[in-house]
Length: 400
Ligand SMILES: [Zn+2]
Image (cartoon, rainbow, N blue to C red; front, side, top):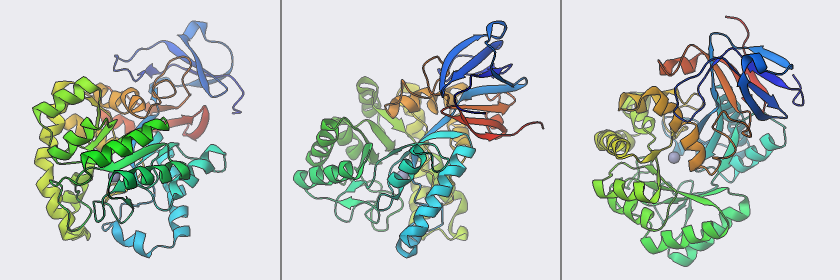
């Protein structure tokens, strides 16, 4: 099926990504990689038709937090220390393809290795390899010895934070990631401790804004979350220790929460038996109860929650976003709310709200078809039959 042909997808139940109930009897028309019309089946134009009876068509999913250079190994620090860079690049390409084939058509990479993920983004854009649309941060900016220093750019003081951001922009970053607090995957730092100062974050975010870039903060402790929001952050990643005051402010400012529920859950489930370092298991077990409570607090308060799994962290595999969506559903979202968080809301979080994440005219034909109805049962998302990115088939399973 050539990209220039008119493609008509008919017969499916359609979930458009906005949170609206599924509709039937409509056809989605795709031309040159763009959705050009959603019309009654009877009025569908001729073209290369795809019959999706019995299936559900929805926007390709968006994972707002991945690390393509990490492979879900039990100890994330070791491979980065021991693996040749060329091997990291090959593996990152394969993980990108695996992600697209699992129906995730856009990812935001929030910390790579020596800009491998930015090269992967370019290879996909140039059509050399198959993969999702990638929004990449390059190196996160952390304080000296801060969380993630093993892959970050360490910076101290507002001037150095500013320079660190400029370096990422020079390397081709689409978004800037800053480390506001301690975290789980770095020995010797605690999730509850603040790290970059308010002044450092203000300088970093100002520099990102000058270049028209959005920002994301790894933020677990309440004080660090509060400072990141005060500095004007776009999204709070993890958000372990939210408070009533913080969620009210997030709602007022339109700050997104990317909960990454599966990151500590996968570590706690695998545990020491899987070879995960003791410090990571211990901290994950500590953060899970407040993490879940914070997610529920934010959801009830109407904070915009964008789906992101932190894929690549220990036993948190690249590919399907379903494990994260199932946790969001387990802790209070309806299936349609979880799907919206991975489509319309995620696209808004990434600044792609007029590009992808919705089935409507003018949007990229980033589409997936699954057997059954994920609005009834999220696990239907695992039964993928078709994945299109910009109208090009990444995966098409006929029959069955
Ligand atoms: Zn992460």
